[in-house]
Length: 188
Image 1 (spheres, rainbow, N blue to C red):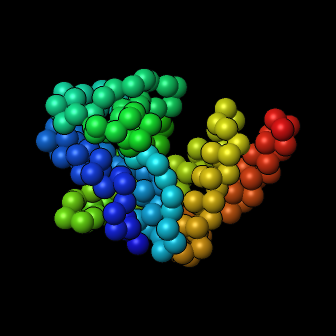
Image 2: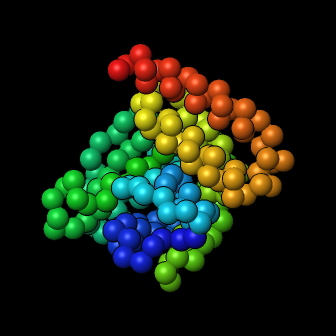
Image 3: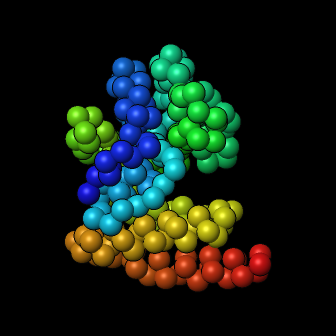
């Protein structure tokens, strides 16, 4: 469990957590990096996903001072790019997300120690619920939805106690998988 040695996101994660801490911004790491912290199997991801209680919580001044650049606000995220001299596409993307479930995930976040960093991470239960919500989003690309479902299955397989805490999780995975697969076939 954890970030593999030499992970390309480590420098960006360190700068991000410093900026969030300096601003005293409550947050919860979600997405692929959070899944990676809870599972034994490596999880490839190119970005850092951060849940907030409100978009007003984004510490714009601290992020800008740390070299992060704001890119664009989308329906489901506010996107930034990590500092660096590399071309834009090679720098780590940071996506802040706010939805109905994120305030709870932020309030319940757990502290992880990752290479001398203190990182707030969504609880297992909240991470599964957030991933299920993303997988059930009809406007989301089928490939992204299927990736979220794979993450949920990996978490359920490694943490069997989740079956009792989220009894409908496996049914929701099966249902969302069918919908995503059908949508993917129609688009092909």
